[in-house]
Length: 64
Image 1 (tube, rainbow, N blue to C red):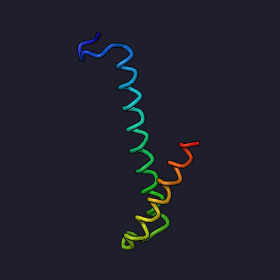
Image 2: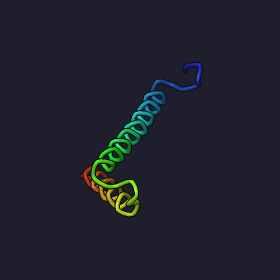
Image 3: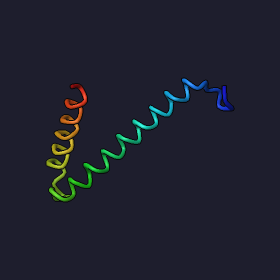
Image 4: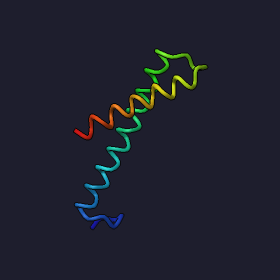
């Protein structure tokens, strides 16, 4: 056990969770940047649909 009270296995799971959380943040930032290139900032409805469509695509791909 380390000073945080985590065993080696627990720490590995925590690191994996942290990694996936960072990955999701990175993907969201990347999609937001792409949205800026395709769609005006003033067209919030289309921007939301674009992001939802891309997130849905990613989720479907992860299910395979």
